[in-house]
Image (cartoon, rainbow, N blue to C red; front, side, top):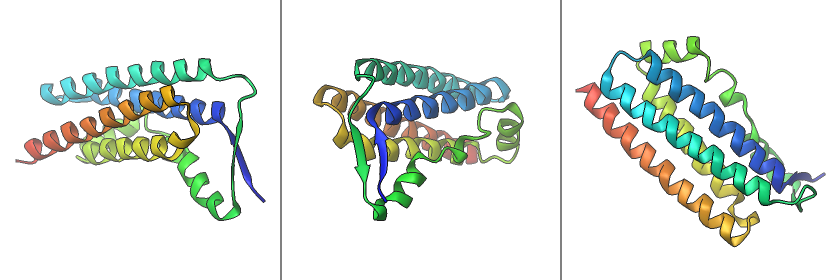
Length: 159
């Protein structure tokens, strides 16, 4: 049995993931007591908002009944894990964020969320139009930059 995803569903899931990351980053910025950390997560919040807007623009250019992407049975489990939003279930709650800050794993989580975004975006690149593919490739590069900035700050704060 094959799994079917429409291009609109894929983009809608990307929007939701970006919104969840934005909420997480916004809460980290609000709850952190370190000014440098506040600034970085404020920047990341703004970046995620731009990503939401980019994906909404892509979605709005897609027809309502956009083509469907079919995956074979052997890809089903993998694709389900890529689409799975359980990773994002609580990340935008202030309680979750405060625990992450207190446990000093906020950078590990944020880097993981950025890697998840790159994986998600790359998996669906082949199914986008050339112009949309270029937009998403630029978003991938931005996510890589976010990982570099998060990694640098993580190292500085560990010193």
